[in-house]
Length: 308
Image (cartoon, rainbow, N blue to C red; front, top):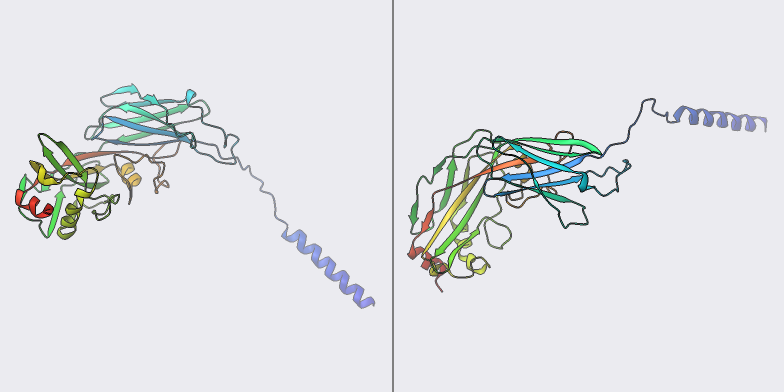
């Protein structure tokens, strides 16, 4: 009996020692709460005359204002460039769920120009971004306008590397024109439509290649879309146009493997781990577009593509 009591006592002492030995220690240093920051996303594109700047705030749940709606009445957004100095015009977004808003700068970027975006609010650190607009590219091939009687096995566009450019993004358009019907165009490398060419990605290389059979199949399916609901045989002129965007680093990371320079807001960018906003979050980028010479489709080619 005595031995049993001693054994229980030994186990109890061992258990108490283990508890105090393994007890977690409180940190001696301070552990401040994360402070919410202004989120700024924008993509300035040379094909547009209005540039949208999206503003929101982070929502750290450890912060006191994690659930507080952003007070846009106290927000000031400025756009400053080498050529323009003005405050961007405010236009509220109707997205009440995200409590977001966007601002508009009436401006078209020019090659190699520098501009800055500044978003200030009395409750947050002032968010700043500085962007260098990429230079225009020089199209090497096709070097001049041409007319084709048949779809080649491979259609390739290549261009020279440019200054202040981190990568490139290429769009392919089919454009039809008739003095009566007017001008209609559609982007062919677009996953929105079935049987079209795949949506491009932002890439480092200065070339873009299209498989001829895929292009021909794509062209035959354009008449099924809303934009090209009239057969191209009714147009006086039809041609292919290749557009190359030279991208700043911010634009490259914003577009990534999906997106479009004319549509992306930055809020749903899959590469938000990258940010070039000082004292804030988000991405500011610029894209400058250069068009290739037109590649005209001959009448015989159009008839072969769209014959009944």
